[in-house]
Image (cartoon, rainbow, N blue to C red; front, side):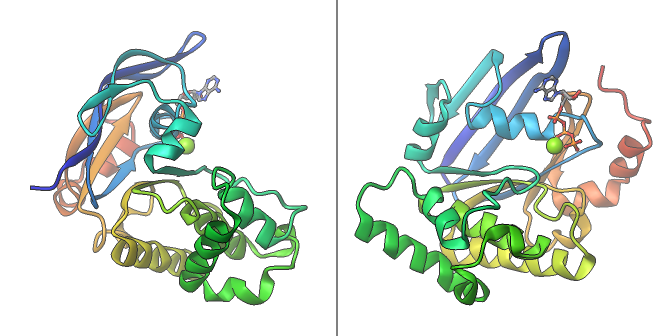
Length: 242
Ligand SMILES: Nc1ncnc2c1ncn2[C@@H]1O[C@H](COP(=O)(O)OP(=O)(O)OP(=O)(O)O)[C@@H](O)[C@H]1O
Ligand SMILES: [Mg+2]
């Protein structure tokens, strides 16, 4: 069996009066590829933010390689977690290369940083001729590729991807998913992806969690979740989360 890298046990998060997560338990093994699904506002992004120290955890436990931790972003980066947030937050006025360098802000050794950027560019050769271009001039698909490449600069063990296909044309969605598949295969990095488009990911995702109203309503093999029809019911609001 693979080692469990990351566990959330009974995690609750409130934003003021809004309960974003209510007793959520999930786990991620080394090298695993897991999807989080569910309707808008279900709490998917909050799960990723909680892991990355960006959401106020009120209750519950986060474990990294079995030990209880309090997630703080820069410490999570040091542990090997990389977060590619929803909406591919990009420094649009900076060049592609500068954005990649920002992804390695914790790397003090400039030679190592260069190496890491070159390794990332091996996976994203289409960015090579664009290194000097302002990121804001790239297409949505191009910017998503930069965001993914930037997420790899720290050579992560875990990649947190929040809706990488959001707002992209179908052809670009396919290209982005193929890249993510390649990252998973070539780097052996464990991935948690928030994605509506689960059917296009079935061949690469091993497990999925379906969220509704801040809770996990079902967890299991991706195929069995799709076959169960639960997704349709959750998206139609026919499954109660509380
Ligand atoms: N910073 C915040 N302040 C207040 N409420 C928030 C904040 N962030 C999220 N929420 C609320 O918490 C709940 C969960 O939000 P979250 O962004 O995790 O959902 P999501 O499943 O990612 O949705 P989407 O599919 O729209 O991205 C929602 O009710 C949302 O309005
Ligand atoms: Mg979200």
